[in-house]
Amino acid sequence: MADGGSAAQRQIGMNGGYGPMGTKKLFDEIPFLEGERLILKRITEDDREALREMAHSNSVYRYEPTYLLEQQYDDMDRFLRDLYGKFFEEKQNLFLGVFLKDDPAELCGLAEFYDYRDHIHAVSIGARLREKYWKSGIGSEVAKLMADYLFKETDIEIITASTMVDNKASAHVLEKNGFMTTNSILREDWGRAESTDAYRWFL
Image (cartoon, rainbow, N blue to C red; front, side, top):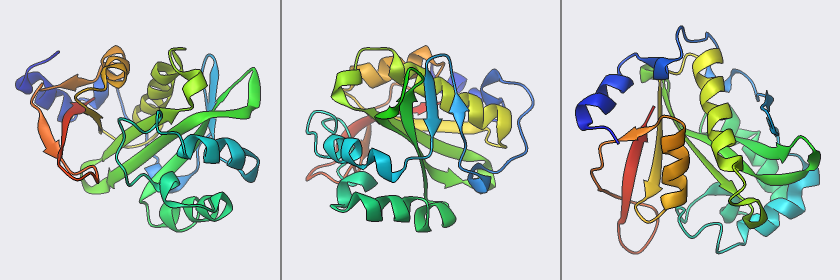
């Protein structure tokens, strides 16, 4: 883990050590990202049942905010229309489905780009996986694919993420991908009755 000085240094134009940044804006496209085992791509109506199952899982959302978009909709078709309609057009959220190359019809989870701050070339990322895909290394590859895309193809310079203090698995995924935190516990509004103890991560 790094101290505050190191984290701040990584934020200022260092681009995660990836070299020259790309020229695309984050919302110029809905990207198709391919890794060693995974594909991240647009979610379609064919994924609605798996998406509905995940959105109703207490286990999946144990360490997540209560206001995540997919949990606010009973109608997943409407969710998908809004997701790639108003939310994308207003540059609020960009969601990609997570799929195994060996089974590209089966939705494993969601990858989300959010809190886009174009004026400082920054964005936050998050991901959640269906429970049967936990402890498989998928989360780490998802984070890598997202960071690679942002730093190599877009003009993003700063990537941030947040985790609940108790969410050790997500913290491990971020650390494995080079994210750093100041180790200062923040009190954040995650939509719960009381503020949530969380760590803020930077790449």
